Amino acid sequence: VEHTFATIKPDALEEHRDEIMERIQAAGFTISQIKETRLSQEMAEEFYKEHKGKPFFDQLINYMCRGPCLMMILSKENAVQEWRALMGPTDPTEAQTSSPDSLRSLFANSVLQNAVHGSSNLNQAQEKIKFIFGDIELE
Ligand code: ATP
Ligand code: MG
Image (cartoon, rainbow, N blue to C red; front, side):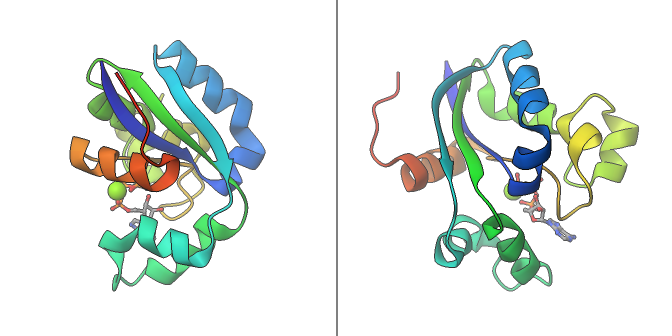
């Protein structure tokens, strides 16, 4: 199996935790690790360092720090791509037309407040897993 890194962002965790968890289970993912973490500003800046300098960076950091996030390792065949597909596109307006059953279509409030995070590739997944969960053994 493949492992990816997934996050339920603070607003979505507060408002839609159970519905999102049900959809993750229904899609056939195994939750290999799970923990609730409130990111500090420094941690959030490291987490999204690839976006440093973009016009939305400060808003993004504020958003990610405003409450606990649910951090997960999701495991499944082709997990990286499958989780990106379940999330849907970054912008919920686009998600509502192209993938109406996706998590962002259903639960995102805006392109910023878009409910969930998922690694874009295996390298990024490994990096985020290490950053949040440390050196852990995965099959
Ligand atoms: P994520 O990395 O959170 O899974 P993504 O890969 O779909 O999302 P990225 O381009 O990596 O999209 O953007 C990271 C996050 O920054 C988005 O999930 C969203 O919260 C925020 N974001 C992206 N684009 C914008 C924008 N144009 N305006 C405001 N916020 C944005
Ligand atoms: Mg991204």
